[in-house]
Amino acid sequence: MVYEFEGRTEKEAIDRAAEALGLGKDDFDVEILEVQRSGLFRIKKGYVKIRVHLNQPALGSSAHAEEADEPRSVPHEQRRQKKFDEPEAKNDFEQKIIDFIEGIVRRMGYEGKASVLFREERKIGFKIDSEHSSILIGKKGKNLDALQLLINIYAGRQGREDIRVILDTENYRIRREESLVRLAYTVADRVRENHGSVLLEPMNPFDRRLIHTTLNDIADVETKSEGEGLYKQVRVYYRGAH
Image 1 (cartoon, helix red, strand yellow):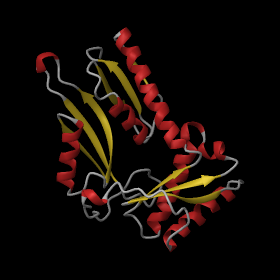
Image 2: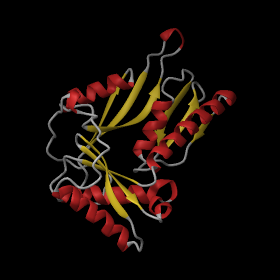
Image 3: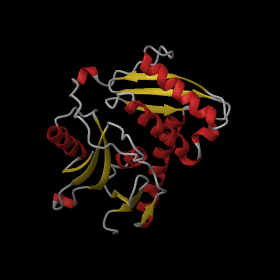
């Protein structure tokens, strides 16, 4: 299910979403749609618009969650407790996911071994060790995103709509995050020099959010998402240039 909220800051918008939905802040994914900062002498008030995606994966072809039972809120101290040990499956569900991942890779014509990467409240990561990781990742990670979507659909059909599965290989997601942060700062420097704007490549919601949050504290640069569908583009622009 998708909702939109507004606030003077990203934190305020997320707080409003959590209160309205009755969820913990880690129980949903946030996509930042638009950021506008307060103007000179605060004549113009700051403004942040976000879109909230509940973490239950869809049991169909859509990349977003459909309406489902609302998950219970989790105390803050129980969240963000990643455990990077014990790569072997600890229960039947984890083993089914591992078998499913390896089966998909095998049907693609490649060999790969899956294992648990981390465990977190309402989230679990798996990695694939394979000689064909570059193919499994695909251009801009689109193959990996598609595989992750299929795995989340499968997890939902196993009755685990309450948990989100993250798939990685060769530490791609960490390397992608570092690359996007560098890109964000490079583009910000460019638009500050020419007082113009730059439209970035289409990205998934998580990559777009990283661009938005990276540039959130640069006073004379603003960002907003443009386009339709899952892979929207982020426009980075000098304040007053649009």
